[in-house]
Image (tube, helix red, strand yellow):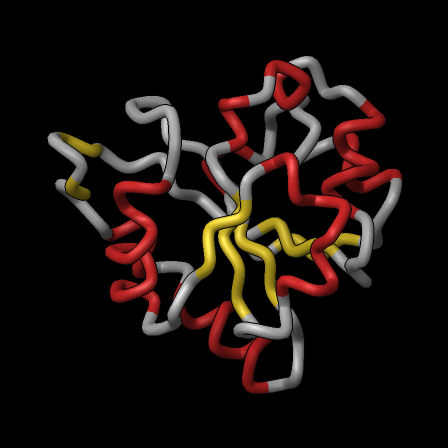
Length: 140
C-alpha cells in the first residue's frame, strides 16, 4: 500500500493516498482475507505515531507489527483482520531487493496485491522480489 504521505509533528498532512487504499482493503476483508498492509514513508522512521490515524482513514483498527515479529504473523491476526507492518524504510534490505527479506514478508500469505502504482517500477523487496514467493495482482 502506498503510504508515502507527508507527515509533520507526528500527524499526516495529506491523506489522499491512504484513502485511495480503502476500497481494496474493504474488498479483501469483506471476502475473508487477512490483510497485512506494508509500505513506506520517507519522512518518518516508524508508523507508530500515525498507526491510529491510518486506521481511522481506512476504517479499520490496526495493529502495528515490527519487522522482528514477522515470524509470528499468524498469531497476530487473532486480534484483527488488518495489520500494519512498520515502515519498510527501516530495513536496508528493502531497497536492496533482498530475496530473503522478501521471503520473510511473504510468509503466511497466499497472494500479494500491488496497489501501489507510484512505486511499482521500483526494484525493491516489497515490490519486485516478493513476487518470486507469492502470486501477485496489480491494480491499474
